[in-house]
Structure formats: C-alpha cells, structure tokens
Image (cartoon, one colour):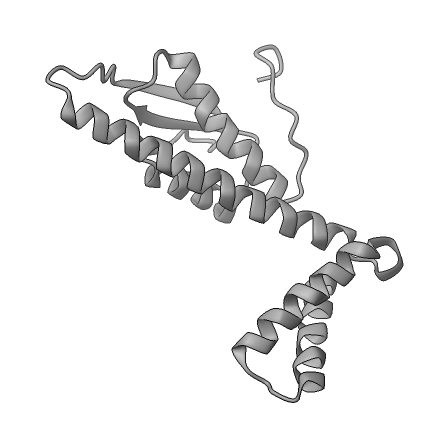
Length: 167
C-alpha cells in the first residue's frame, strides 16, 4: 500500500497546488503522481505498485476486448438457424488461490457470454465451467487460463502454467 498511499498523497498535493480540490484536479493529480511513481520506481520503492496498476489496466483492456468479442459471437449464434454451439463442460486446474481471487476469476468468466463458472473441486484447485461456441475442449481450457494469467499478473503472483505432469 506504500505506492497507493504515495499516489493519493501526490494527487492531494497537486489539487492543493492547483488551488481547487475537485474530482477533476484529484484525477489529474493521480495521473501525474502515477507517472512520477512510474518514472522513479526504484528510488521511491513503488515498483510493485506500478507493476500491479499496469497489470490491472491491461486486465481491464483484455476483459473489455474479450467481452466484446464474446458478445458479437453470441449475437451471431442467435442469428443463425443452426448455430455450432458445441456445449461442453471443462475442468481447469487453477494456480490462483484464496477467496477473493477465485471469486474475481469466476465473476469474470461468468460475465463473458458463452461461459459460466459452475463450481470448484473439493480442494478448490479445479474450476468446472460450461462453455459454448468454442471449437474444442482445449480452446475453452485455454480461454479460461488466459483470464487466469491476466489475473495472476494483477495479483503480482508467478504466472508459469502447470504442466500435465505437475498438475
């Protein structure tokens, strides 16, 4: 939280120097403060914060792109007389741990049209999801792992994938 607290402090200082403490000035100050923190991460000790914020913005862009593509795909399925839905249930071994990250992962997966998180195994290491519109089980599996990869970057955790031998 050192980086976040420093960024908030820089935003407030900017607003005070601007002579107007308003939402607009606080947002400008936060942006300028973040730029300063990103320019000098070693000197200010904010490397982890800058990395997580960048990963969060990347995750947001990734999610919006995937959401748009999935919505268009489901809309095209609705317009076809016999859409190639190929419904399937996939079991995906997870690397993410903890209630918050698991909840975020399942929420993101369920928000995307064509996929629904169904539940976890008893040890919460495997996610079961229902998917439609993917060519095969491997593609559905990879789509869920791509979301998990992005989420792991936001959480600043290692992103190496499990192999079948280590799973």
